[in-house]
Length: 198
Image (tube, rainbow, N blue to C red; front, top):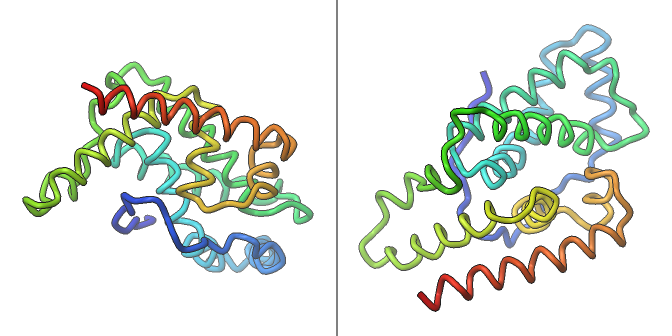
C-alpha cells in the first residue's frame, strides 16, 4: 500500500524534478522484465506530486489518497502499454486525472468545498487562523474553477510543471496551456476578491 505524507498547503516554491524520463523508462523496463519491486522507485518519485494534484482536484484528503493509490495500481497493471518515448509522469498523470473524474462523478461526492479542511487547518496555532482561512478560501476558489482551468492551476502551482510538461501531460499545445492558465488565474483572482469583500 502506498503511504502518502503530509500535504503541502502553500504554493510550492521548490521545483519538483519530473524530467527523469530516461530513468523512468529504465525502471519500467526492469518491471516488465520481472523485477516487480522496481515499481517502488516510481511510487517514491511521484507519490507526493500525484497526491498533491489529486487533493487540489478533489478537495478531500481521503479521496485524494484513494485516487492516487488507484492511479498507481492501474499504472502497474497497464505498465506494458506505457510508451517509453513519452514522459512517465504524463502517462500516469492521465490515469490520475481519470481517477479524479471518477471520484467527482460519485453520487456521494459532497457539495463543492464541503470536506476541504486539512488536519493542519483544524489544529493550527491560534495565530495561524487567518492563514488557515486564506488556505480554505484558495482551496474553495480552485475547486470552483472549471476542470480544464483547475487542472492547469494545480499542475503549475502545486505540481511545479513547466509549460512543456503541462502540455505533454494534458495533451494540448503549449499555447493552449498558457491561455487556460491565464484565464484560470483571472477567474481565481476574481473569486478571491469577491470573497475578501464579504
